[in-house]
Every structure is written in structure tokens, then in C-alpha cells.
Image 1 (cartoon, rainbow, N blue to C red):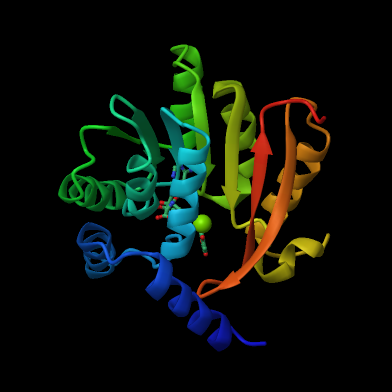
Image 2 (image 1 turned 90 degrees about the vertical axis):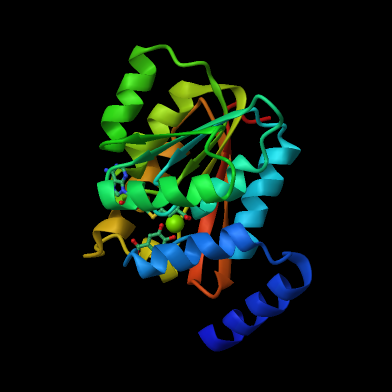
Length: 224
Ligand code: SAH
Ligand code: DHB
Ligand code: MG
């Protein structure tokens, strides 16, 4: 089984189940034109995030790692009237591209992009006693995933859902001696979540046009 096949099947699925969307397509085109890396979630993954947020009835969403706002648009569209999304991004160029993409998609009224290191923005949200979040998507620098996850739990309501992208990294996560700083960061995160009594979690492996990777799904609740 090959990456070519995974990509073809992703195309087959997206053709059938994910309606073409001019604002999402334009966001990817503008991101590519501005030189942003093409590391956004795939269309079918974006729709998965959208469905999970809707299934969960999320009214307040936190995102860590905006890039050009592609996943942000998918998540913002899951919000009911009056819902809010806060997205955190450290790179001013990414943030500028994202703001234009969010505007074009018609979700800028629901989305607040906070520019700065995510750890600083998260500490600020804790300090200001931000209203708890229902749903968090963690997708920034993998080295700091454990830190972001701890903040996300503290900022979640009881019963909040936290999704973490890129937890398999082509299987690199298996190697305790990996030289890949991202995979090492995910290993530290998985070790900490295993011992975290505040949450109950699982992980699923995925294949597709972005290769072989996976998501963690964590519920802020004790194991049943
Ligand atoms: N969620 C996006 C992809 C995010 S890519 C999507 O699927 O469409 C990861 C993003 O995290 C990049 O834009 C990168 O600039 C940002 N990032 C990296 N380190 C960060 C940090 N310390 N704080 C905030 N953002 C960071
Ligand atoms: C990378 C980051 C991501 O968030 C992703 O989904 C895929 C790749 C990266 O930094 O290489
Ligand atoms: Mg990712």
C-alpha cells in the first residue's frame, strides 16, 4: 500500500462527501501563493473536525496553530449563532494570510486570532479566567504539545473535547531514541496523557494524502 493509493482514495472520498467550497479553496490558493507550507488538514479531516464540533455542540472553540486558517474556517462553520473561536498563531505572516482568508470566508465576526507564542497566549487566557472552551484543536509546534494539552485541559469545561493532530508521524513516534524533535515531543505528550487523571483519551492512526499520521481524542472526564 502506497502514498499514491492513499492520496487517490482521499480524492475519491472528498469528491463524494465534501462539497466544493469556494472560500476554502480560495484559502488554500492564497496560502500557497503567500508561500505558506501545505501542512493544513485535508478536506476530509477538516470536515471531520467540523462534524466533531457539531456532534459535541461546541459553542466555544480554541485552536492552537492557525497557519492560513484552513482548519479554522472548518471549525468556525461548526459554531452556532453567538459561538466564538479563538485561534493562536506565532507567525505574523501566517496570521495576516489567515485574517484575509477568514474575512473572505465570512467567519471573521466569530473568530479572534491572537498573534504570539501559543504558550504566552494560553497563559494569558488562564490569567484572564477565560470562559471555558467546549472543544480544542491542538496543531502547532509538536515539541510543545504536552504543554499546550495541559493548558487546554485547564481551559476546558468538564466534558470538553480536545483533538491533537500529528501524533503518529509516519510511525516515528515508536522510536524512543528518535532524532525527530516533533516525534520526541509527541512521545512526551503521550507519556503525560497516559498519567493524566483529568482526561480519558484514545488515538487513531490515519493514512491519506498527508501520509501516515493520527489524531488523539481526549475527553476532559475521568475514565469510565
Ligand atoms: N491548523 C492548521 C495548520 C497549522 S500548522 C490547519 O490545519 O489549517 C502549525 C502552525 O503553528 C504554523 O502556522 C506555525 O507558525 C504555528 N506555530 C508554530 N509554533 C508556534 C508557537 N510556538 N505558537 C503559536 N503558533 C505556532
Ligand atoms: C507538519 C505539521 C502539521 O501540523 C501537519 O499536520 C503536518 C506536518 C510539519 O510541521 O511538518
Ligand atoms: Mg497538523
